[in-house]
Length: 361
Figure 1 (tube, one colour):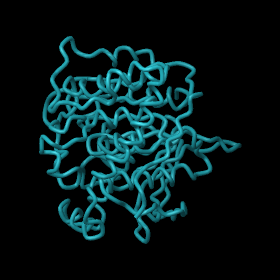
Figure 2 (spheres, helix red, strand yellow; figure 1 turned 90 degrees about the vertical axis):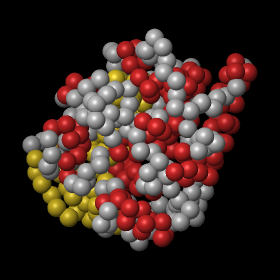
Figure 3 (tube, rainbow, N blue to C red; figure 1 turned 45 degrees about the vertical axis):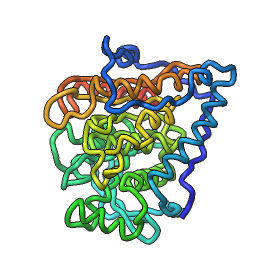
Figure 4 (cartoon, rainbow, N blue to C red; figure 1 turned 30 degrees about the vertical axis):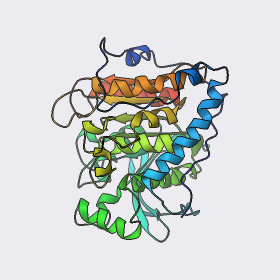
């Protein structure tokens, strides 16, 4: 087993030609900030935030938080070095190729994913890459890759049409298992001290390995996107892997009580205790200063993010400010329920295009 800590090398030279025109709109909290589900521990003391070396103090605190989260999530093995992929099926679509691929995920265990690649011109063009993580569905990777499902579900396909290379890996909950609980039981046989959320993080990082190694992908322009279950994975992937330069998390539920974070395939019942020391404002802070957008539907069946998510973003904002750059952390509360609405998809796509330097289609 290896240590969980990730080496972060956040470039201080990262610049953007522009920002989305609506950036300030998604940084405007409600007049009265809702109370968080549980008191949020300060990321730094007031004295640390005001110190001349505040950023250095945060970077030391950052290492401590990574270790603290490792202690909660439990161990996983080193990821395989091989980035070899086997193509199981290829389809030519308008303007892109969709491949069903297979690669070594955990050592000795293989996983399927869809890979969507814009058609190349006369010369090889390196594209921005996206890890697109699917929602809860027994169809797993087929809707997000556009094999089936309605327009709102075809997130990966639609973004590939906008010029991204997109990989859509299957979540372990539907990998050789008869039920979600069966998947968790099989995982626990291998790693009895590890939470399901670390398995999801590990698999998302492994998909990032595969994406970054593709010859048509610019590894300096990698992003992540996901809805619902996939949005939870995006939060963790972006926090713990600095290769992700920009991300959008749609309706994953930042607050522990906003959705089923206590399920055994996520963090489990340990988070039900008032004494549980970790919370998700820490992950948002670990993402700083990279652009991160949360989409919220506010209300309706399954809605998980909205005004109640603001305390977590507000807690992380001072950490973003320490980097001395424009704060690119926001909540787009479209108030249209759990699904990704057409307008919010357009803004989601624009966020990723702008911050991963992809021209408008």
